[in-house]
Length: 115
Image (cartoon, rainbow, N blue to C red; front, side, top):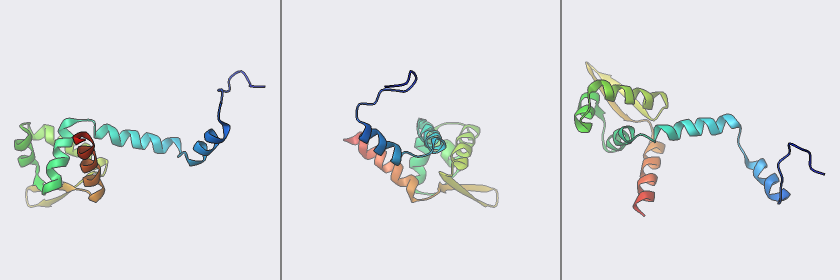
């Protein structure tokens, strides 16, 4: 007999298999946080631009038509999530994608919406 607070299960073997392949709740939270970063069109524009070439923050601001401060704020979020990296050359800070995984995510999303 089913306990009061236990959810009903119709296909026990399917649920058991799904539980075996489930990840830790913290992993799903980290994944959701990552996808939230992709949920902003300004950040996506930055990532797409950096997919093609390294750019400085001033040029990125000009490309997007926003202030340097606005770009800096978005780049900080992307840096903290390890989606972009930077290097300094004198007074200029150059940004690029952190790795090929980021490019693949953006490209796969673009391919998906083009279908």
